[in-house]
Amino acid sequence: MKQDLIYFLPELIVSITVLFLFLLDCFIGKRSRRIFPVIAFIGIAAMMLANKSSSPLPSARFFSDMMVFDHVSVLFKYIFGLAGLIAIVIANGSHELEKVDKANYFTLLTALVLGMMLLANAHHFLMIYLSLEMVSLLSYILTGSLQGSRRSSEASLKYVIYGGVASGIMAYGISILYGLTGSMTLTGVAEFLRMNAVSKTALYTSVLMIMAGFGFKVASVPFHMWCPDVYEGAPTPFTAFLSVGPKAAGFAVLLRFFFGALSQTTTSGIEPIKIIGLPALLGGLSIATMTLGNLAALQQKSMKRLLAYSSIAHAGYMLLALVALNAEAVTGVIFYLSVYLLMNLGAFLVLIIVGDQLGSEDISVFQGLSKRGPFAALLSIVMTVFMFSLTGIPPMAGFIGKFYLFGSVIKSGHYTLAVIGMLNSVVSLYYYIRVVKIMYFDEPVDGRNLTTPMVSHASTVFALALLTIYLGLFWNGLANIVGQAKLF
Image 1 (cartoon, rainbow, N blue to C red):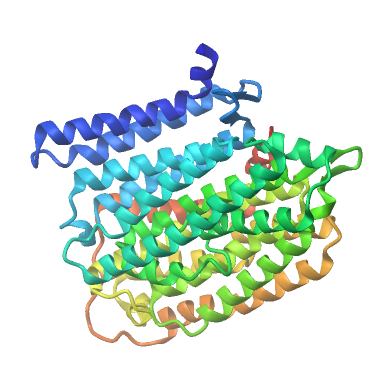
Image 2: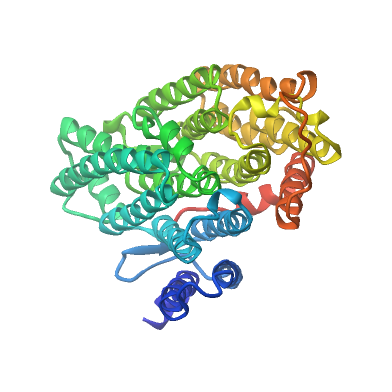
């Protein structure tokens, strides 16, 4: 039991932080609300320090096989922690959240980070389901946190409806899989499928139904329909977090599900269990997801909807790597999520800075942005870095991320899928470069200049841009760390 608590220490720190924030809200009322983001920030930072101290521990399953500790879970906790810290900084200075109850917002945001950590550690289907529901329910509340905003309430309602349907389908799929195998743990399912014959139809049906829950979380086709409306209606600071945090948690549990329950380790490497036809299923999903996301983004006039469809396309790229089902796929997905966090949060932060001052989230506010004063000119350069990186143009970090993703696919022999992924990247160049074009070559719609925002926003957006460039030039350090990731 003592050893279990040592493995659970990062989650325990965040849990205590959440409880402390709840109690603090009860005692101080509406006074001293500025302390809530500070405490949330300290709690998540402490979690990351505890996570670093626990990283040398050997891989293990704990809490009666409900959860697992390995190097992959350690890396994902760093991703969740960094996303949470940046989200707190972004939200703390946003004009859009001035009417939001800050105590509730930062408490629920911290609890959401905890839910994502639990999901990345889950080894038992009950734990997977409960963690997924925790992440979803908190996301519904934060999406509708803008009081008096019809758009925010509508987005939250749509999110609840789509999420409820996906959750119900997933629960039914888990029940079918349990009926077939008699096990609720990932390794237990894999062991049974290796040793026993089961109905192909029932097994395939259960996998498809379980994918409804995971697909909803990562916004893959056909479970993507909530994404554009929710991204557009939610507060932009939370949309920024939603685009990277829960998506990373979804891919964490996808890696565990496919590598832990539906594949086997042989002398020649990792192989999917033959009766499922997993590469064909994932290949079809990835092609549909990236293609729909890129084509739908071409005609968007709202920057938030453009980034929403872009997020769907990037989910397709990462699903593409899962088709390979090799060690390089794990490295590729984690590396890509790491750099995607930087460039996507950076793009949203630029949108928040511009939107707060110019009062709109349409692409039109970026017209002539480089001509709206010295700070706006710098911001245009920063946005160009993020747009190029999201496209996958060297020497940005996004290029290295796609190199690892497509490299894992090529190594597995799926050359056609790799070509389709590259062609989709070419398509995405149009709508990303369109943003760059209007910033430099179009005239501003009015004569307003951008003023320098609060220091935390300005320093964060420039730091994210520098890191995006740095990891595009010197990626070996991160690649070596991620390359050590092995699922238990």
